[in-house]
Amino acid sequence: LRLQTDLRLALERGQLALVYQPQVRLGDGALLGVEALLRWQHSELGPISPAEFIPLAETSGLILPIGEWVLHQALQQLQRWDAAGLGPLTMAVNLSAVQFRDSRLAEGIGKLLRVSGLAAHRLEIELTESCAMINPQGTIATMESLRRLQVPIAIDDFGTGYSSLSYLKRFKVAKLKIDQSFVRDLHADPDDRAIVRAVIGLADHLGMRTVAEGVETAEQLAWLREHGCDQAQGYFFTRPLPADALQTWAQQRN
Ligand code: G
Ligand code: G
Ligand code: MN
Ligand code: NA
Image (cartoon, rainbow, N blue to C red; front, side, top):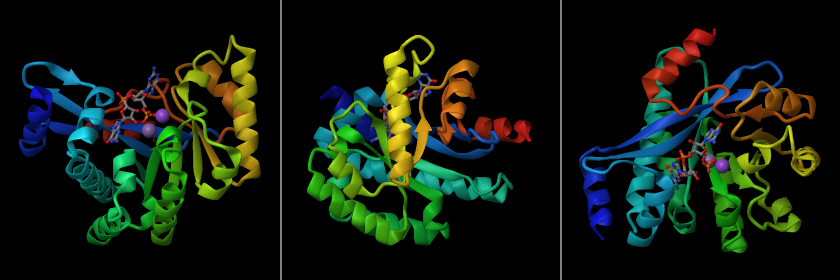
């Protein structure tokens, strides 16, 4: 309850912040975009992980104003990077199941896009596989409304939920994000290699892109490139960075 009150105050007092992790194309190493990740610096308790406070925000309903703040902030940042000449990056934003259930989601996103003047394909919505499967029919409907806006959708943490292949087909998402638990032991675990190969093959046949998460080593990167994975993100490139640091990181790579 204390944390819930604090979270509401944090939103009002500007104590939430976004950090950004690069998404890199494996073919040529180009920086394609970033994923926005939410951070809360609590005045007494220090940094609190979104894994801890997002569930709290969901039960209290705070996730809706927080989610709107995240979208607004992320699109503003994209405009600043455009102005700084960083190239047309994409911005991936994580949405919770509660946001996805909100019938006004697409309308809200459409409005934010219009105000920002950014093309819809510059934004990308990430929804975890487990969130997508809570109410698959509802998920399809919301995805349909986002598709009308031309906002691409990625399934996050793919392989850790329980989506049926028939739903995967009907979701018609642009991207599968291969969960980091399969990437971590790629070098040692033949089962993980089999799973990642299968996911890449499946995505290829369904016309989806693949993004490997949690890439930490050159060996993982080389294996993923060799096996046709499209993109990667992870500590191998960099941890999630504040906006200014991300910009410096991107400019130093050129
Ligand atoms: O950045 P980190 O690895 O600590 O993120 C932990 C979890 O919190 C991840 O599952 C991530 O998807 C989720 N998360 C990060 N930022 C947001 C956000 O803005 N909204 C939602 N709903 N989840 C987020
Ligand atoms: O669930 P989601 O994929 O949205 O969240 C990604 C989480 O993984 C974030 O908390 C991010 O900080 C973390 N992360 C990103 N790259 C790496 C990595 O290379 N290794 C590990 N262990 N965690 C990572
Ligand atoms: Mn994500
Ligand atoms: Na993920």
